[in-house]
Image 1 (cartoon, rainbow, N blue to C red):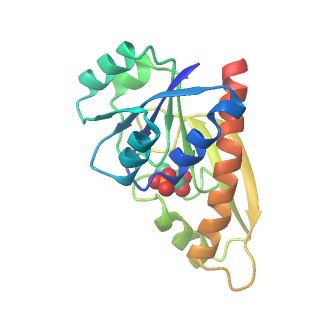
Image 2: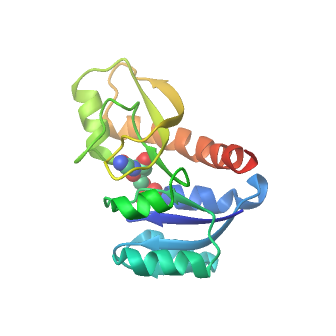
Length: 180
Ligand code: GAR
């Protein structure tokens, strides 16, 4: 199964996906970024083709050239147009660092999510892996994993726990979806 990973940031999630490719039997054939970012450097260091673009027609064409079958978002911070989501219906997944539907939507990404969860003194947070549609964080949920907040938890300490869950479960879920 050839997959493309879309990213916009530091690319630690992408790194975990690349490190687990062989073990979990998927192949990252393309990394798409919408800005210059560390994720692109990580892909290039690993010898994976990259595309920097915000042109969805061009992205779609390059996906076809690489015979991509599934798109995995890993810290990709842009809304995807409706026509593209419809064309790739049920073939685009995202990971979100909270238990959706809470702490999702515009503005809720990365550390902003953890800051809000800690400020609200939530008992639990976690990760959500879901299908992607044209609205932020609202597609059907595929998988969730929970983690408890402890006394004195900070946004940084929570982020570290969440990342651990992300790096563990995202490759597993991709493999499960491929097997279907
Ligand atoms: C990850 O924690 C991912 O869940 C989150 O951004 C981080 C990306 O980090 N995604 C969102 O918040 C999407 N709404 P990375 O660039 O180091 O992989």
